[in-house]
Amino acid sequence: EVEDTWLDLLARLDGVEDYHVYPETIYSDTVLEPNSLPVSSFFNVGYYRAKPGDSFGEPKGYIGGINTSYYTKDISGRVAYSKRLSDIIDTVLLATGASKVNIVAHSMGGIVSRAAIRWQGSHRKVNKLITVGTPNKGVPNDARVWLVENCKLQPWQEVELIELEKSSVFNGKSYTGWLNHDWESFCEEHGIQYATIRGNFNSINVPFIEIGDGVVEEGD
Image (tube, rainbow, N blue to C red; front, side, top):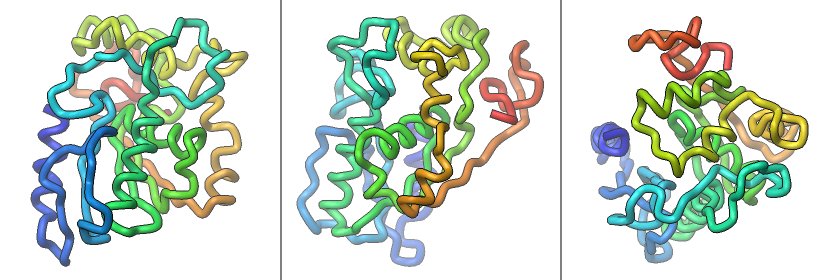
């Protein structure tokens, strides 16, 4: 339903101030003709699939981008969502003729976007990034069990949950700790503007969240 929500929001922008909204979610295997779309185009992007019709988790994935030797879990055969996003950015730039994209990313999509920028070569292709409800400093270590039990997360998502935790299991830091290291100076060097939108309405009363949106602490 999350994909449908973003498509509905985008549909309201179609035709406003000459904006063009691409009518379908695009994936890493989506093919768009070069210079076939206006520069002022909006796209809904999915990284859990390579193409429409694929099942979530086939093949298994992870956020990725960081040194693979830092992982304590076996990631062989998994696809990196950050690499998929980087490939999608290339497709969008080719189709629109634009030199850079602006990204609005929701929840873990913000971490995937930042990883694509930091480690997958997209720092040269992104102008602005807005993250919405993104755990930029990670999620509490108690979150993994709760998320699996209450949010219908699947066993194949175990690696991304480890990547999101604050535990220092990636060569002495958390995954987001490495992502945040010198992030401000990195973005300044490459001319990337960024901001985040956070929430503090915890409608589901998650026990390990004091002030936040139910999954992400307000300060994270």
